[in-house]
Structure formats: structure tokens, C-alpha cells
Length: 156
Image 1 (cartoon, rainbow, N blue to C red):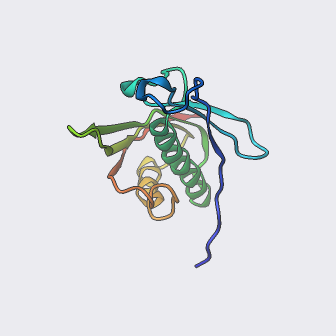
Image 2: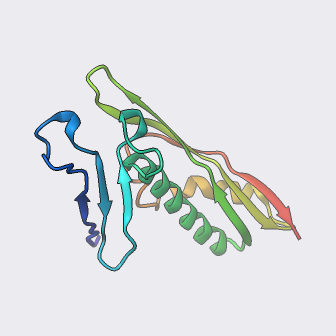
């Protein structure tokens, strides 16, 4: 086992002049300003009054889970001799908020649309999704169930 570090810089941008003096007197906005990378402008979940045009932590978590799964699937497909020509996912996460305001994800479903070349064994390709969870950094780190509902398009 080896450890490795991941860093990010999160900078609150929501001070309207009085800081957090009043609960409704500040914005729930921030930037992710990781050195050497583009800035990501973020806001709170729209359900909590955030800006729906900006990424929120929930968006970023489901996107990270989907991207990690995709990268490992492509790796495993390549190792298995399966040629993937396109991959797009529209993941769905379901969350809940209790009466006290605490929230969590209950489950997520990855719904990739995958294009493969003619002659691909789709059962073999589908079996790779279950193997991804054994290696994907993000999938191994979340504490909610993740399902996979892949759809395939076979091309020439």
C-alpha cells in the first residue's frame, strides 16, 4: 500500500460586505482554485437557495463517481480486447434531507451509453462494470450503493 495526496483550494466568494454577521446576509458561493487548473465557480444546492447555474458539491460528487467508473471501465475494456468507440453517462443520485437539515446520498445509478465495435460480447462488456467497483477510487470511498445500467450501441 502506498499513500498519495490530493489537494484543492476552496475559496469562499460569498461575502457581501458583512461576512456571516447575518444568516441571510452572505452568499453560499465559492471557487475551487486548484493551482495550475481552471477555476470552478460553485454554489450551494439549489434546494438550499444556491445558484442553479453553478456546480454544487453534490454535482461534483456524482460527476467524480461517474468519471472514475468510466476511466476504469475503459481500462478494463481495453485489457479485455473490447473496443469502445464512445462513452457518455447520465448518472442519477438520490439523496434525502432529514427534518434537522442533514442530508446524504441514498444511492446512485450510473447509466452509461457505450458504443462498441461489431462482434463485441456485450455480456463480457457488461460484466466489467461490476469489476470497476473493486478498483475505482471514488466508488470504493462512498458509503452508498452504486448500480450500473449500461446501454450499448454496436457499430461497424
